[in-house]
Image (tube, rainbow, N blue to C red):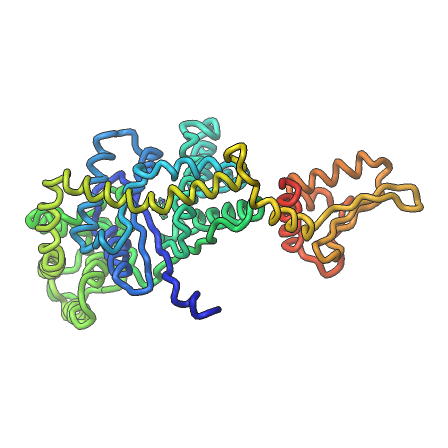
Length: 440
Ligand code: TRP
């Protein structure tokens, strides 16, 4: 790697869906590490309010507006510096939806069928004996493509996300790769960053803190409300004086996410010494409040001035569009949405790509039968067919491979074989390249 590459800033991008009120789990898992990362040198951060994504899950306009305000105010109160960071609202960047369509046209429907969120909805319907797509919107189905547009628009290298989102980043990567194959190198291939060290915060009932479990502690709930909520954290029935287990204690894990190491060690000791649950809850309450109180004040101030936040977001959108507008122009031209008198600049590149691409070859042998084979760009044999009675049969089998990819090999095992030393992955890559070249 050249030194100029090393010096180039790494772009980090992440979005938060605007459907809820930020809770302690969001703070520990996302807001706090994002703000810390945005202060590193050599990093350019993009943080945005994913309100288009919110529409997929939420049909309540007031809630979406309120959540957008609350999440924006939370990030700012937690120390996000909008001068340093690209901070914007997704729906203020019309190029995102525009790019979504171009990406949709290079996304395999089969890949979307396999997306976890969609599949979970279908499985649930199946289990209930409903139509598989009952109550499933096309928005849910297209979710990964919209997310790919978010990521690819700003050529992000790294995408910090929770485990549940890894598949989406992989899909964005596949979509980018496919587009680049077809139209030249326009997109950066993103990588997911999953912070192993960032704790998954348990909620009031001990399960992962999540709005869907209704077990959250809102980040900026008033002090007395915070005390009440903490009093409701589940514990076991051990009396004061009895030693307590830190293992599996939601209270302990939440404390650990806010405390220093010596503080955590002290609580561990107190557990062993039989601290009463009431006292332990008091300690947790004071520790969280100590960290949150100054932010809570800033939050209250921010949230009571929505106009100021609106201006900030508008300024952020203007900055983001300085990148998005010209890039969208580039991508539109690449796919052929361009002025009729424009030169087709990328075509030269496309042609050379085609010349070097893997290819199917059809031929007839002395036995009178019709064959085909797949060769890679270096003329290495990848696939070899059996003999077919007619050229049409050979062509149909070949086109099935072109359309369905390696997935078709299992069913075609009597007609087509991998060449010695060739793996299905080699063939998958070659099929993709040959499809790309054919499309140019
Ligand atoms: N889908 C993400 C979530 O639910 C939010 C999101 C939307 C996102 N677009 C993104 C995250 C782009 C990272 C990058 O958590």
